[in-house]
Amino acid sequence: MDISRPSCSLLILLALYILQLAGCMNAKINFREKEKQILDQILGPGRYDARIRPSGINGTGPAVVNINLFVRTITTINDVKMEYSVQLTFREQWLDERLKFNNLGGRLKYLTLTEANRVWMPDLFFSNEKEGHFHNIIMPNVYIRIFPNGNVLYSIRISLTLSCPMNLKLYPLDKQTCSLRMASYGWTTDDLVFLWKEGDPVQVVKNLHLPRFTLEKFLTDYCNSKTNTGEYSCLKVDLLFKREFSYYLIQIYIPCCMLVIVSWVSFWLDQGAVPARVSLGVTTLLTMATQSSGINASLPPVSYTKAIDVWTGVCLTFVFGALLEFALVNYASRSDMHRENMKKSRREMEAAASLDAASDLLDTDSNTTFAMKPLVRGGVVDTKMRQCEIHMSPPRKNCCRLWMSKFPTRSKRIDVISRITFPLVFALFNLAYWSTYLFRDEDEEK
Image 1 (tube, rainbow, N blue to C red):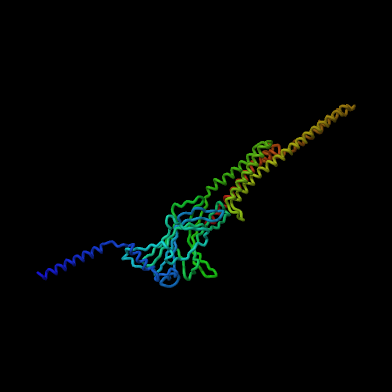
Image 2 (cartoon, helix red, strand yellow; image 1 turned 90 degrees about the horizontal axis):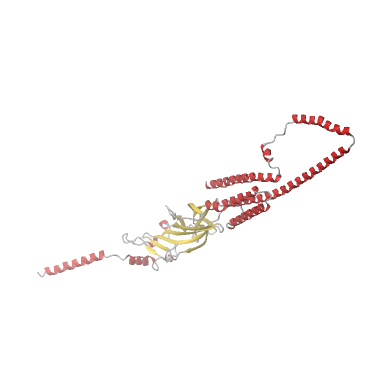
């Protein structure tokens, strides 16, 4: 009995130890505490130096950094300053073998940092940037994830104002290509290489809306640059924007057409209505000039001719031509009046002369001579005139001369010709204008 009592007590103690060990195994692991321990272990003093770049693939060669972007919004595209503003999520990913750690059997996926200065960072910059800022509301929108195999993911939300040189020769029927360029500032390609992430390097938000442009497509490419200090890795993404034409059709083209057509109303007014025709011509001319100056105020002062300049210039010429047409009509009207007055005075002088000749004949004493003159005139001369009229056919008139003969005065003929000529020439100009610029746009797109 004495031997069995110690053995029973040992069994009881062993059972209690096994139960305690099972409870410890079932207890939850504090992963936050483990993360702290791992970070202190891999980033502790004397273990990691952020000033030294990581080694390349297989421990040799330059460090490779994969880039991808997520375009959140494109706020403005400024034609005058030739720039555009974009907000994007920028991501970099590279391998740093010094940051490897134990993932506790797959239960610790990654470590998260918010201080970028604790690890090595690529010295990337945006080469065509004008302005830029980070987002710090409510907290800085940045994080760094360290994966068990040493991969580092850096993500940040930034807003940039970037330069976008534009060619406005086809404005507003143009397409613009705006680039986003990223390059290394200090590390050459012997130490650092940027690559686009495989698969989908650039993502764009689905509900992206721009007021005057449509994002047609985007292309990724490389733009390595060589300088006196070496070759530097560079990436770029080209955003192809197409200008929305409906806005300009409503705001510019249709009002200009209406002003040109209104200037033609003066052709249908009476040539004596001088105040009405002058006020109509001057008003349309000033309105067209104001429209042209307003259009040019919203565009940069470039040295070449734009498509909108051709349109407004020709419309202004038509309006100015309508005003000059009235000046010509007024001059022709006064000339017609002067000619009618001259004809009237000439007829009066001829009538007076004929009356004087008749009175002289009545006063003569020779009755034989007076009696023979009508006989000779009526018998011989009239007969010859009738024969000439029979043998001579009347001159034929074409349809244009026959139609123009309905308007006896030159001033009226000028108005009638202008009613046909101005609309016809303007229609031909529209045909040439739209065919030229639309077909040129299609060729450039191809």
